[in-house]
Length: 341
Image (cartoon, rainbow, N blue to C red; front, side, top):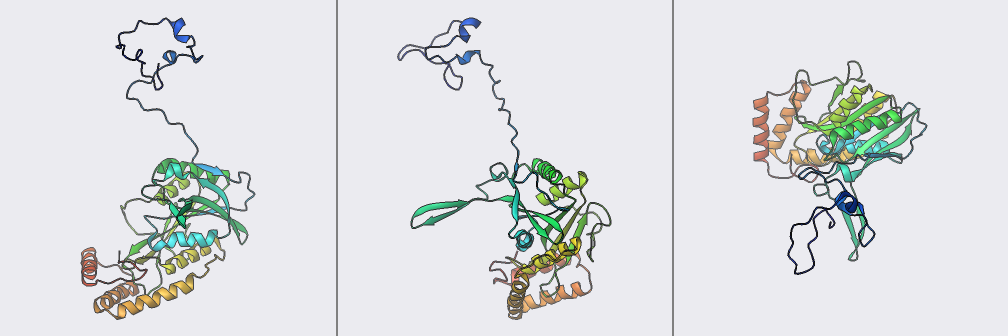
């Protein structure tokens, strides 16, 4: 038999004809090269795919890590990371932390959609930087904070969630905190609102309320799949989600700052914030200047301010009409160097 299981033809020029059936004894004999004939091996039925061999999605760097009351803070880029607020906050938390677990990008990412970065020096390709998904450990106060952060997986969400639970159990995690950010009808001139979720009542801390009230159906992010998986495994889970002005594109450091403050209040620690407060002030001034130059923008922001001060949301139809009118009437960039979302 030829490699791959297809029959060999005879010598060049000889027509392939029917072959006499070989005995089971002869089929097991070695050929001229000393390699056993493949005809005796069981064949996979036509059309049936090869069975996948399960390979772990993660590698523990420190399986016997001596951690003190470890808690996970998780943030993934993508669907609920508006203004990069969640991943920016996670980066501050994880700064100088040591890697305790890594997840396999070859199994989780579509590199055509999330391409690695190639660095070329003087015409020579030098290095590739690949998307990563890691868990880092950092001692903050009297406990260890494990920061799970990186690119949102493209594949195997359910299996990824199961293996994250496995990692959490091996590291004896006591709590789970997800952080994220969503665009909302809020003005940049008011404090960043934080919306909370929890696996059971009474877990949220500070003045964060669970919400929104009632039933809400939205496309899920991978971070939400992780939330539900860990809570079903018996690990208390909460989520803190910053609401950022929907008309701002690009990074929104004020939201990252508020997420870190929410995490700090929840864990009773002083969460590191770095230069986020200064960056938030710089962006605030840019947005104020942009709004002052355009009457439509200014009026729209003032309407959002009124709703924020009254702690109410606009009617759905009115909000949609306002947003469409705002986007249609303004034609210049605002914040972050990009067009409004």
